[in-house]
Image (cartoon, rainbow, N blue to C red; front, side, top):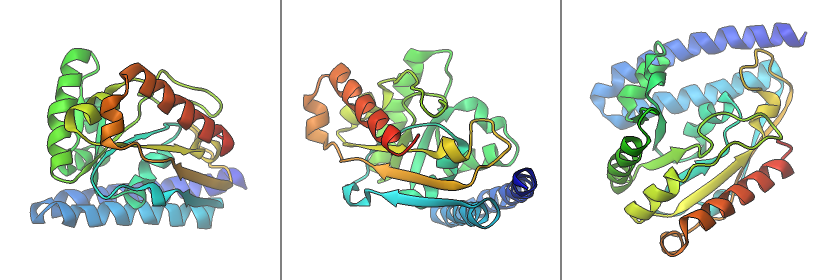
Length: 238
């Protein structure tokens, strides 16, 4: 039964992704917010399908930590689920992601037209420069910047290699950092066809203001973020 439910969901999810990616692309000529509406609708619909078909619910904690201004969001990366949920979790944002994702039909094309910071991993120095330049511009335009400091998905119970790119951007742009933990990989495993019933719990941790980011040593702040995010993730069961 679990296989059948997952199969039905995956078919509907792929179909809706093609449809809403097309809507995002077509409506981009009417401005960012027109496309953003369809991105949020796709995100919300996906989680309705997850609940009704797969028995997966979404719970969110810590929105009281949201700052009034745009910031850098540094999030745990376990699954496709937190990526899909992001439009209904936070204000309008841009991703920092690998350029290869643009080659995914429809979804990648939608990412491209929405505005993203697409880096080439083969040149770390150039990538950092790009993140600072483009990220600072988006933050100035009141768009949040979302980054997964591990760079790639890690299975529940494991920790990836945290990179300081988000801290460097926040320092250079004069903005704060909002950490985010979750357990999405438990219900939607990395590269997993089967979607397991349960509750995806997302927790936003206390905001780190710009002044505190600027005053901290980069290595110390990275270790603090890693410790806080991983500890919260473990508490959530991820």
